[in-house]
Image (cartoon, one colour):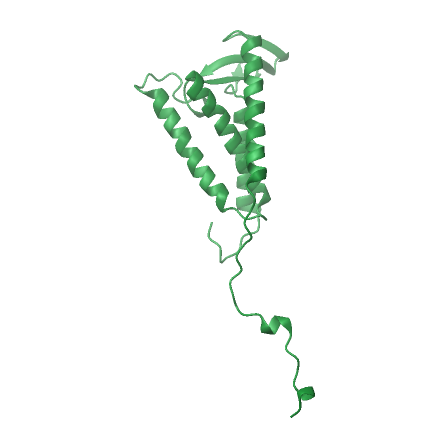
Length: 186
């Protein structure tokens, strides 16, 4: 048998079975996005605090939307706002820090193709940091968006809360509608 009688080995046949390691994903876009959300949130809150006296309202769209400056000493959606727990500020700050830590760890393990989840977690982290800054600096979170219809009012919220909400929707969208592989656990 001569060399011309032997079939050439193709690249695919010669490639050893080595597991593919995903290329590291740059955290820079995430960090820039988080910083942008925090800056926007803090600037808008500052403008509201300077323009609207606490517990006063400015009508934006009659019978639908007001800017109402409130101080939220509780957690999400005003939960624990009326509570007089000892060390409530410390407890809510610790909860926020724990949530931020968990979210940051989850964000670091995402792959490049998980774009919706990465954008969602960027929004969540930016919003969480924006509210944490208020909580540490002021002892409460500045809320001001008041959406209502007749006598029904949604909880007052802010830019950070809106970022967290949209981010959570994007993460769930990616989690439930994105492509997952059976070999990869969630």
